[in-house]
Length: 107
Image 1 (cartoon, helix red, strand yellow):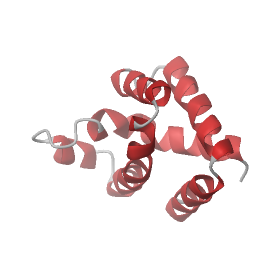
Image 2 (cartoon, rainbow, N blue to C red):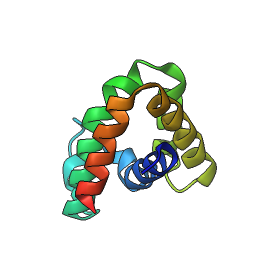
Image 3 (cartoon, helix red, strand yellow):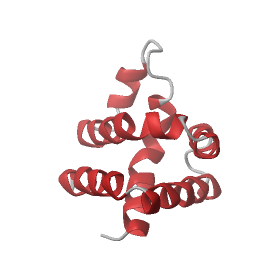
Image 4 (tube, helix red, strand yellow):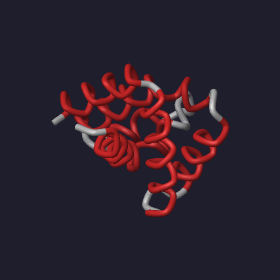
């Protein structure tokens, strides 16, 4: 998988779950998130655990993630986050490898 494919797969997995992931800690977020399906939810949580600290350390990526959390079906918001993820992955081969492993493990 190349960086573009990894970024697209991660964005696609996070899109339906991100509104719930950013509300982590709010009552009911876990229950609502599980409605996505246990496989999708578990993969999204694993991706988010890995990405969240990195995203929060980068204001531009954090803004793109918040935008997609607010409008998960907006293709422009998805494209913005996907682009920012590509830049992160290009700069961090270990992150790219870890995300690829998670995505491939999820099928």
